[in-house]
Image (cartoon, rainbow, N blue to C red; front, side):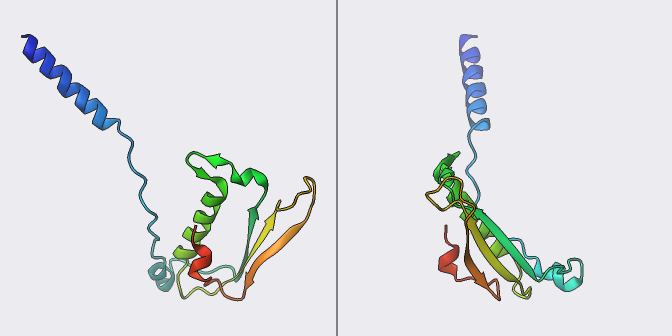
Length: 125
């Protein structure tokens, strides 16, 4: 009887440990929006966009396991890889907070192109 109880406790313990184990984060897989664009399900509504990025000192602080700035760059990269090739957009990146003066209202136009297809090296996090 003791063996059965002990075996049951071990099986339940292993089940709980594996069931509660932290799942690894999956790599980003861009969704193919080209087919929905071609079918007319999705329609391009804008020709230009502006990304505003906080470049202040607080962006170097961690959020969970990564720096906030690293997460922001990953999000921009994911957006970049999801936009279909046939969509032509004019995009720009404006940053704020990258100054030593704490209450400065200065912003910088960091990147501006007539076409969104940015160099891959720029989009790496």
